[in-house]
Length: 400
Image (tube, rainbow, N blue to C red):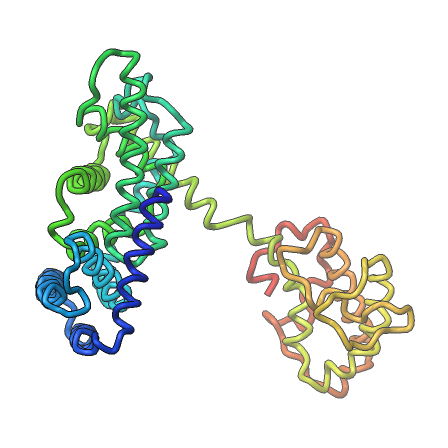
């Protein structure tokens, strides 16, 4: 969105608010508030909601033209007042009108996920974009403009994001075509817009387009704005229906690329293997085998063993302020504040060693006569025979 448009719309909106603060505008303020309250409590119906908003703006335009505060006002000033009114009302009703149905949210998610897959392999040549129009800098600028669309709540501002994106693309085509001595047309523009949209993956694309279509003043969705808006709607439809036949790509290659993209995304979501990632849970059998009294009895033993094992520890965690320290000056439980993903193999080996020592001392008679221990699979002390080198073979069930 260019600076002049942003500055102009800010002046328009704040001028509208200033006039609404005038006591003479009380009748207009009441009409606006009444509409917002009535609209807020009505059942969501997108098509009907759009018509209600359009009718209200037309009614208010007539009221503003006849109002003393706009006596003698120019057409531009009247238009600015209605623009300010649209922004004010739709900002108040945004939560009620934007992506108001489960179906809209579902379509948004499906489009976003499909674009995410396509981002892994789609190239300009797949859309038959001539090399003369390949310009990464211009494409990136257009992407950034389109990605701003969710930062605004007013239909006009969202539409301006689309206009800014499309103008960048149009300027690119015009400048590139000068060397080719030809005028770029829709056949040149739409493929570039589709590619930029896939690269940008703008959030909630479907809901944003629907919001603009329903709640932007209809008399403003004309000329350049209508052309660019319609092209983005066409780009969205193309992406939704896109398959191998839509692109210059072999069908088998397309399917393989989509499968690889799905695997890459799934792998990224799953993260690293959990066997070692969660081995910090090796200490949990102690907590489950002992009740609170048992843990109190174990504390002196743990204090001694863990103190020795943690002498090379870098220092106390910030989350352990106020904890008691052992004789060696270190914390008695150095891993209490650690996250599973922070543990190294050496840390896990220490924990296993500590666990074995505690079990050996407790099984010598210090506690077994006083407390009942929970058994795990028929064994009171699992892992006492496990070696450090076998840790990578532990399953999640073994660890916890």
